[in-house]
Length: 505
Image (cartoon, rainbow, N blue to C red; front, side, top):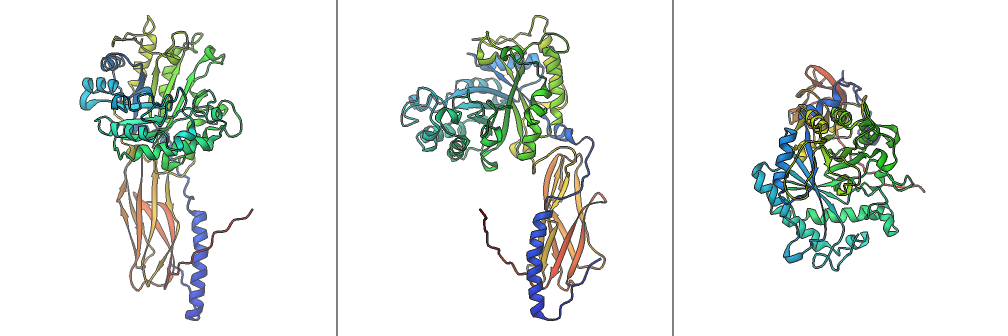
């Protein structure tokens, strides 16, 4: 029931209301992230069931790239929704071109409106005039990119993609947390802040093309090498405003790197690498794609390639932010003497594809793994794929209301707002407001429901004229069950007082 606040005079009333507003502001900040601990037993696979996981692959570029992809689809018995390949900046303005469209044209000629999303692993190497202000033989210094010396190329690259019909994910300057990567800031005697400045600059310039078909990916390696202060993958995160997708790469190299056999769980869900997929989901509300993944053959059962593939694709749906898996269907570095991650053969020229190995065991395991209903050939839109909040695993609140303490002034405005966020819900949820008996409080939700797997709705609480001054406990209901409570303070006049920001050394 509502509580009543008594005042002896209008002067005391004003002082109390001001003090209450300041105190409630602090309480609201403290309580904004708190909620119930209800958790669906199947919460981790809700997103995979609702949004699916896109079947993708890196296919080595060939003279007939469309046919190569088409034949891969036929062997896999499921069409690729994402195709990834590598490009550098060497095309910068040559013959007036800023994007080498040969492969994209092959894809378009083969698939037309059904073309897969093209993920361009875009490497800042070998920039040249007139796209850049000078030629670069190899890695472009981060400071030069940040200073705008290649802005002409970056902007025109974006405009070239904008003019095309396909959807693009630009995976820019990946695996920056490996010192062996040419654009690692260590190679320029700089630290992660230099990478972040460079990445942000490129993001801003590329986005200035206003291309709706371009999305940008931040893509570290699953582990950092070396493991030293300042080289953790999270040290390189440029901020939520500069990331559309998070990509992650990780392989089981086994003896090729004199490493023990590593399962998918060893790579992506072990203490050794800080449970990398869950750590990223707990830090950043961004959709994820496993941008490069693969394994070599092992010594024998159960440490063999077919078993690794089967287990990996069975495990992926339990990571709720993962929206795609891009299998690296090639040798490491396209070098037959290096680690063989292929599940079909690759060809240097035409589009011929055949099962591997002779028995076809790798191809069969791959085909059966992606046959799961969790895997699809269409990538959700960025808006659909982006979660409304971070997710830290079992026990996290799945329905939250924030803030939980609001104030309404009868002298206006007589409204207050809260946000209801649903994460990993398995059915459409509509909401109602339950107010104390006899109160003149009402509420509405826009939109009126949240659909699986996640979403947000804004709750507007309104006080009618004549609402008694007091504190009201208002329940947010869904499907007849109380989700959470909001404490609504109704006062005569609402004074907004701004506190100075101070710092302490």
